[in-house]
Length: 371
Image 1 (cartoon, rainbow, N blue to C red):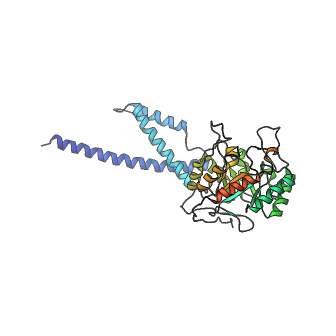
Image 2: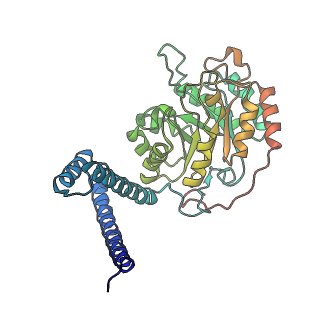
Image 3: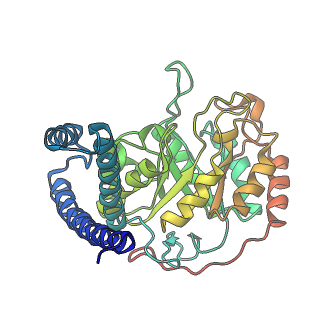
């Protein structure tokens, strides 16, 4: 004789069986969605198709016989759609070349002397004036920097400015000055490229190409940087997400150049007491998500020299691979970014402060052509 208790167990058993059937169908759906994502990647289309989602929800409404309301059904399936899209994105991200695959997966960029490296657990400092203004200015600065062991000198000859009436740089003449000074003190030059048409000319002067924040999403330039033999410094855009930043690097790496160095330079927020907001949490995330070296720019993030030392300490303590800071022999007369450039004595104090911050060594692997 059937009892309520027996009936309860029978119904629960039916629910358990349906649950397993739903689970099987969900996983089956996920596998098909994954295949759809592969086809979309080949077509170059977005994972998210709002028209397709609207069609599926409308079809579910038409076939819904209750007892769940249409709103409930749509809410349930929207969660399934979100989970499926997240699965597609995770699979796609796992395949990108700049994504860290294992904890010890790490790119080490080696410069032409075979000794200077970025990403090998030694904290590198990239520094120099905001822009090349004269031979004397560069010579005074480089002499002081070389005494502190700096190997990578800023040699900015082209300056993208907010106003077209501000100083735009000396052009190729500035590159010539930077190269002469760097050769004199045994240093390497990094300089910003504005357009792929400059590659051939600039290759005669620079050891590291620099892609600025304004060009972070210039895919044509990024692809061209994938064809050069020099390493490339890539700055995060003013309002770019970390994912967008990584995909920008992917353009370069997937085009053939594995030697990419990321620079966090602060993002635009509502804060007005600093030029930008330094995303130090973003540095930590980048170190987890990508194997590329990460440098912190404390000059363009702060826009002021009076907080350079605490920001430099934080940058080193965060696990970053290096620091970018601007130094000028006489900042008040600098032709650009006068407020954020350090004097030489201020730079020496910053370097002393950095020496007091210890960093934990990490394992490293070099890129195929990084040595």
